[in-house]
Length: 340
View (tube, rainbow, N blue to C red):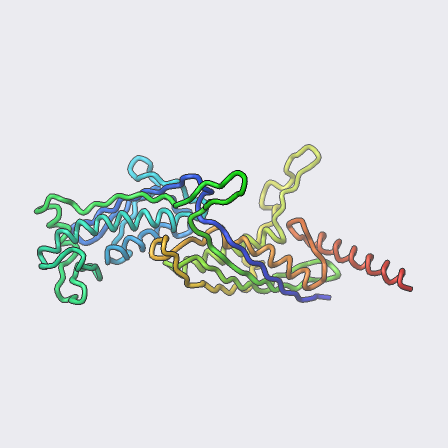
């Protein structure tokens, strides 16, 4: 008989390395056609980091994302980046990219201000134009200003910057300190069906609510959450490395190392909590690894809610779940016998 259960799990997760320096650097160049070039050492592994960085630079310069050309991960030409790890790219590399774009923008403002008859701090950027705050009709095209900066003022609009998260070492006795600059938070709820005659678990639905700061690209955030849940389902129910008595792995390929497919995915509902972190680029933090932290715990709590057993080693295979159900029934039988 299939029994339904629901489980909830909450998590918090740090962004970046623990206390250790993990800086990123970036270079932004504004071109005379109004586009920009970003040099970054970070790596695109499918998570959308280069899109995010282009959006950050575009926002700072008031141009379109498509107008930002990103050169990445070439150690011959791009500045240093600690790596696309520790869920740090949006926060750390994004801050470096924003600061570099801000420096390039300052050069443009210094050139445009006397042409518009105002001070630089009276200017803003929007829709490829440098304009007077409150008077958008008085404006100059960003490309024209970039050309004048180089050809007349002799100061090409080029900005470089680095960013390292602010941390403080941990006291060895009290453990107090600031090991990370910021944290993200999430709650996930799983709904499962458990067959109490076979131990088979089917994940029907996962609702995931994530606070990753201000989402710069909500669609990418949602995709990462869905991908993390897929990993969490595998972690909870399927993926297991098996070894023989000599320590040799006996399932070293995808024939018998089981991973979730699209057919194993539950219905996923993603809720992005729109918060704001003042230390992040335009309020953003990160969303990479945290997406799969709560999934397995939520699923195992749902199994307990459905059939009243706790599986404490992952994955919770059908064999383990059925063995726990069988042991629970035997224990209940002993109690009944003792009571009579």
